[in-house]
Image: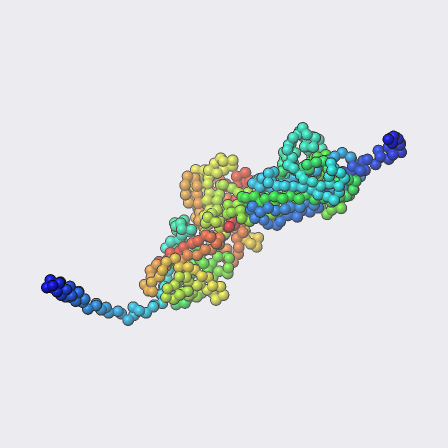
Length: 153
Length: 363
């Protein structure tokens, strides 16, 4: 009986000792706020993929393509490469305005000249800020042929 | 039993009337029209009607005749085995002289009187009908890969004593693979005169005179869908293996980034081209625009220099609108030849001597 009493007391003490007060963490107030994704700046084309194959080296001065992005507007530098807003399937435009489909977790960019809206998919997720890489994927002529442009800033 | 009594009046009348009864429409064949689908899908069964007017003029020939129909189609359609043909008219003389019935593939039995072939001079050639058909008749606007197949009526035919008779051939055929467009052709004649060339009957009332008094041809284009990105249009430029244009697996338009390949080993009949072992190769390209104008880049500039991509194979990747400086215009074709640095060697489409022509291919 005495042994049982001792064992019960020991287990109770052990349990009580192990129940420490829960840790507390300080959470920054701004960590709970969604931020609008920022891609403003000048982006320079780094690589071109066609149907998954890197064809950058096959296109002279391919990496010269620049994409200037400001708040709500964009300007495409002159290039020997296609861009979703160029091509003869529509009236081409190399500047205009843009918007994300979702300002906080964007999956595509809408380029527009006020009349036409060209939806271009993002090939990779973007951070809220300090983005240094951005990928765009799109098709131009033959619908099944896809391109991915990887830009760096 | 009633005894037969010879009546010389009946005999004379019958003797004189016999040719009129067995008149056969032989002398003039005019194809007055063809009803053929403007487009069809690979694997689809299509029905084609060839409308023909036959006139005896003033001929009164009582011999039996085999009607003949030739059909021009891509070889890949295999119409000798896959097409069924029949002819119809509203005349019925007797069971062995039908005014309608099935057509069968000419077997090429040159010993059989109904399958002997006669050439342009009207004399027997000793050849199979289908062989003469393919050597005498052209293949329309097709660049090749097409063949004529000869059909004949299963039985000798009499269309009666009607001087001017319309009849039809009905062809049922499966659309074959490999081509996105073709020109189908039809030839109508009879075994009696074969391919005998003679001025068409001046009594013809049809707007398009027959090619010959004894036969006529008709050609009609068809667009074929579902043939795949590698399919070619038989009515377009002849394909070449010397040059290639490619983008994705499903083809390209001229809004795509295209890669042009040149294989200096793929010359005429498998021989090397004149640029074999060349140190430099330049692409000389001309774009044909939607408004019919052209833009040429044939200056052998640095931008036109190709990159060696393998053993005597060269490539160049371009975005055509920028390469040709075309804006707000559709490029419909690109014409290519390849040259050395000073332009003293020019390689064009082997066997044709013309630029290699590429149109958009996108499925």
